[in-house]
Length: 265
Image (cartoon, rainbow, N blue to C red):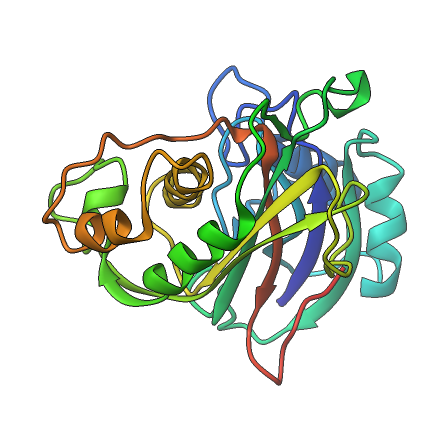
């Protein structure tokens, strides 16, 4: 029995999230259907991150177990020949039998994209959030410095489970402008362009946490909140009505498993 790990990129516009759901189109469902065609038996995959309906990925990581089948280097082309154009296999490799895409993840990098142009380009629909307000990037980056580190994030997220541990460490957060659509794995140099890009990195995230933190940062950028307000909110001293942004602009960029196992686009 071998365990294979694949890096997957997808446009989530027409899917009800990554995780399989009954009678709904999902990325996991499409992947498992395609794998079954290759191996001739049902394949159940495990995944690193359960992205929401409408959210996208540049570097989702999945794994599955098989006894025999095509050589690992033939898997990407074989799968891509069966998958729809909005789901692509970027790479494949054999991993140890105890590898877990979710539990072994050291860091997950998410990106949220906002477009501030006067008119939203039709081809960007579903791929970013359209804002008519010019956001103050410097103010938002000051708020990012407040949010980084270990905190109880219960005051800035939608609570799904009262018993969930809401204390975690946000390793990195930042905001920058770009001239063109920042779909690449690595960010371009900052500019004065119309695309505003948020990046958050942590070992784990709470339910809809990336979208709610970006919502908080946008209110800072709109000057509805100050950086001092963010300090008070994160400490639980000031109430804030959680603003969860739409999934359109959300991208899972990459999963880092440490020096010995790193998945890149």
